[in-house]
Image 1 (cartoon, rainbow, N blue to C red):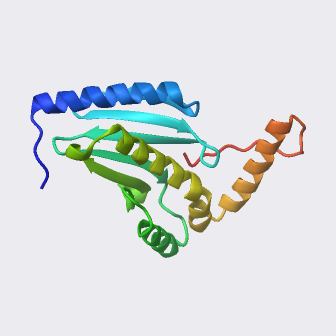
Image 2: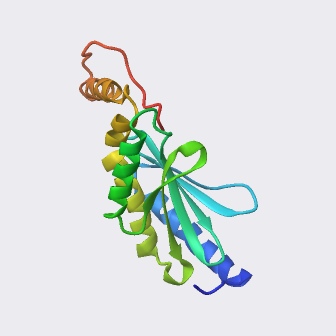
Image 3: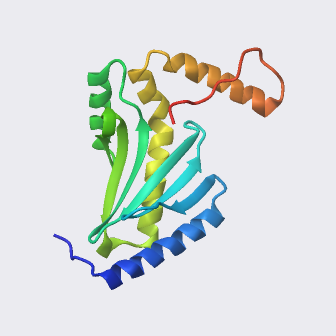
Length: 180
């Protein structure tokens, strides 16, 4: 078991995380927001704009032994639940410092944690980068397993984004990524 941090040590770690989050907010253009959550827990969120999933929000929660991090990936599947769960379990085998899990209302989350004794800016960068890149890599393939309409949504979304980039209409209505 890792060491229990006292209030003074937790306060130091809290300041370090605040400073780190301030630096990344200023350094990366895809970060939309970094803020603290209200309540009894010490929590932050980082909201990032993506290419595949419109937005990924990563929550950091500071405890007395660990810093937990998590992001919502997608809602509970409407179809092929066994295949989806098998896919994410097999993917867990390849992940370092994070794992897929089933959370509230059977939604799919990506989670991980660091012991506070190992907390360093490089580890925080790695954790945030892992969460973001895994969601970007797998979002649409997981949606397509769990939702019949996902493939059509992806095609429509791609057409809309091409139109937005070129400025030329391709015919068709705009689509939004409602699975954020």
